[in-house]
Length: 210
Image (cartoon, rainbow, N blue to C red; front, side, top):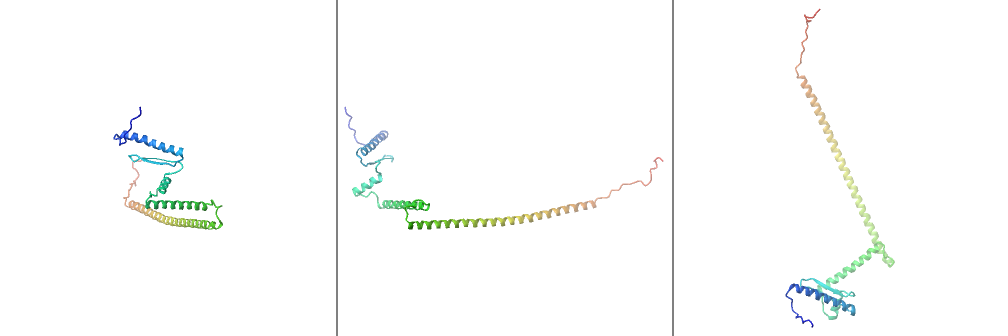
């Protein structure tokens, strides 16, 4: 007994809807992969779930941008608006400039020079000479700045030494003044002390045995 025909309408139960989406999405991608391998067809599939999650498949021999470009050529419909076309052209221009800069960098490093003509080597040589000149000027600027800083440090050292020397002289002078004042004060104090007398007998002791 065969299965009953399923009515195509929105599945109200969210769990059942998610399960059905996963199964059918996998089935579609599987069929796209099979037709790509079996028939050498170029296939691209893009699926967005109700939550916005994207799933995709593209034949290994091509890419989604190439598929869209072929679609645009065959249908005569413009997928990209002028703004996007301008951005695409700008990206291509930047990529080419980057490639050229990478080639020039390799040439400046002395790589891939065998394919160049003598005339093409002249601007490379000039660029290298200008670079060396700029590096030497930068080194000279650094050395001049270093010498300037050394002179400033030497002058600061001399100034600090001068200040410390005079501070030491001032401290020595203060110490001498304090010592002088201390000894002078001791002398004044001694001169003011009363004299002590010891009475000595002028007559012999009458009780002394003769």
